[in-house]
Length: 152
Length: 69
Image (cartoon, rainbow over all chains, first blue to last red; front, side, top):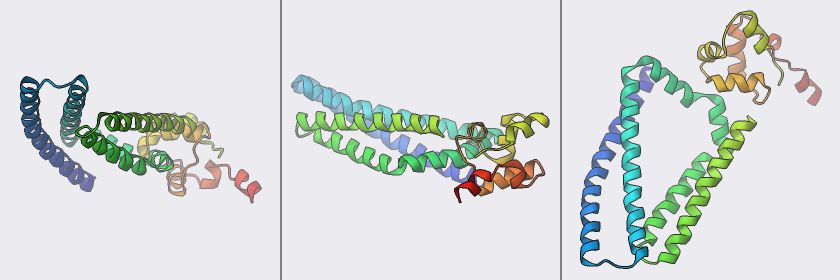
């Protein structure tokens, strides 16, 4: 249990670091987007790409903050920490995760997400295609997860 | 795999949550084992049997495995 507590503390600190970094990047990003809109209104799809990127930033930031709060609460409460540990080490959850190939899914998801963000700077058709692929991967993962949860 | 977990739980007046907490799994895992959807690993089967002070063979029905063999 002590080892897990140390692990959670490290994760929380990592998320705090990521939140600070993302916060700084977000401020810089929002200033850039506002300047772009003022100086060069551009076409509607360029606004969509910038909006999508800003949305990703907000989502990542939100995710980091949620995890920091969740881990901080767990570190103060032994019962919550134990529940978190049980959920993480539960053999059925691990079985479902490995059956689904969750690690592979996540690697592909991150790769396609990064490619989508980069493609936005070059070509809208490629960006929208990759966005479609991204949604398809997320949808497939969700359906597979629900199916395996029901099956096992 | 069939098991007598539900019967043992009810006769000892133990909830799924209590059993799950005692053996270090989630309540959903216990539910899945009782519904015969999920087969417990050897370690988990041993922990459950030990919790009820019984042997694995007394808790789990291993006849299906014998038939397959």
